[in-house]
Length: 306
Image (cartoon, rainbow, N blue to C red; front, top):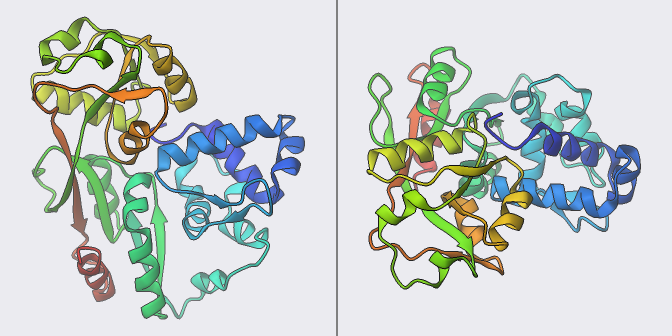
């Protein structure tokens, strides 16, 4: 799974269906604290909040509603919890989102990694509000260039955002922005106490990593290799961010991250960014547009660059 673990997605789906933290915990035979922890880990990975007042009415945020609608594409199974109609039905105050299904509205499919969606979620909402005849659907399964190209060629996406290290042969795209890779450790780790760390020193330091099939792990590894940076062997490979944060704070390894995940790690108590002699490579976020898509898609693609 290239995105959050199926366990976290299942918990999110059950939370949407249950409508409250206590009911969700009861239905899953978990403690409320464990449910809240997994949802917080999911939000950390996505880079945006899914719920307002989780301990109260647990109302989905606008981004949370869009994420719930995209779950049929994001999950690897067709659980009934991932149906967008059900996701909307359990909201305390249902918005007029069912209009998305009306055939009179022109549909635009935007494919993007979930953290990238978090970057422009307000712009998407503004575009929909200004264009009532347009419905925007999300596909959060696309992360890298090969996935974006396939989605565009098959007509499964009108606009695709993806992570890359530069221009991609055979996939016309334009540069959106760059996200710096940074390295994080616990505050008591030997590297955290150094004013400057040489890149070659990293090869002997144990690391923590996302799972090998995770798209974020793959693009980070590719970027570091291209920049001549070698990290030490991983002592843990997991998509459970709470495990990574716990072990980071214990000083057992280093963790490379970029984007919203890196931003949030840098704000956490007990975790510090390593001060390197020279910056680690950056990862580009690029946009590609299906030339066969309706004019509204091209207009949205331009709007997202404003």
